[in-house]
Image 1 (cartoon, protein in one colour):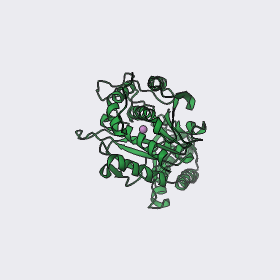
Image 2 (tube, rainbow, N blue to C red):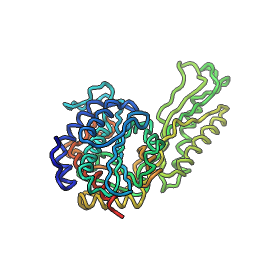
Image 3 (cartoon, helix red, strand yellow):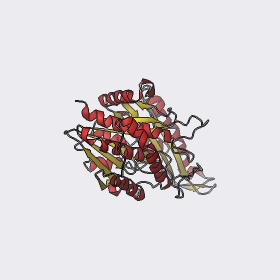
Image 4 (cartoon, rainbow, N blue to C red):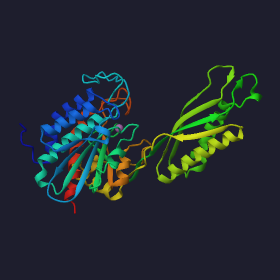
Length: 397
Ligand code: NI
C-alpha cells in the first residue's frame, strides 16, 4: 500500500527518489531501440497501474503510453519523456549495466521515463488541487526515427494547451535547469549524393568519367554553403560523413555515393541548405561530364523552437522551485536535434536542459558514448521540474 505523499512537490520528489532510482536502473538493464520498446512500455504501464494512474497504451506504432491525470478545470498541459535506447555496446561496468548486447541507454532516456513516472505519481496524489488535466506522454523512437511525429499525427496534442519536456545534459551542473526561448536545437536532415560517372581502366582516364574525382570536388564545394552562402549570424552545419566508391586500385568505378547530415536554426536556412546541396552537387558533376542526384532520408527533424512566453513561464517556475542560481541561461542553441520539435510545431511549449554533470569525473563521457552514466542526483530535480511546471501552468490564468 502506498504511504501518504508529503505535502510539497519538492519533498514528494525527495521521498520518491529511491523508488524512481530503482525503476531507472531496471529500465537501464533493458534497453530497447526505436519502436521495439515492448519491455520498457510494459514496465512503465505496470508502474502506472500499481499506483492507480489512468493510462492508455498502444500509441505511436504500438509502444507509446499516455497517462491522464484530471483535476477540476478545462485546461490541459502535456509532459513528454522518450523511452528508446541506442545500438551501442555498454562499457560502463555498472552493476545495473545493460543485459542486452549492443543496446544501451546512452542518452538518458531511462532517466527521462523514470522521472516522468515519478512526476505522474506526484501529480496523481495532488489531483484534487489540479486546476485542469495533465497528460504524461511516454514516447517511442526519439533517436533516428522521429517517433514524436506519430504522437502529433495521432491527435494526442489536439486538446493540449502547452507541452514541456526535458533532456539530461552532461556539462551543466547537477541540480540546475537551463531553459531558453526561441530556437534551442537545430533541424537535422540526412542526405545521400550519388555521382554517376563512367567506369574504365585506371590507366586510361580519358576514356572514363571518374566519379571519385567528381566527389572530391563536390565535397570541397559544399563547404561554401556555410562559409559563403549563409549569413554569418545564422548557424548551419553541412557534414559529409561517409563516402563509398570503387573496389580495386586499377579500376575507375562507375559511381560514388556520399552520405551526410545538415543542420540549421531556422526553417528558411534549412530549406536554403537543401537547395544549395542539390544545386552544387548537380552542377559540379555536370561541369565534369558526370551527373549527381541528391536524396534525403525521411522527414528529418524540424528546428526545435521554444515558444517565448512558455519558455519565460518555465524559467519563472524553475526559479521559484530551485532558486535563481540553479536557473542557467541558454547562451546559444545546440546543433543536435530532438523530435520534440514536432510537438512544438503543434502546441506552444518549451524544452528544458536538466543538469547532469558528475563533478568527480575528470573527463565525463558525452551523450551517446558507451561510457555515459546518467547521474541519479538529477532524478528529484527532474521530477520536481516536471510536476511544478504542470501544476503552475494549470493554475496560472
Ligand atoms: Ni536523447
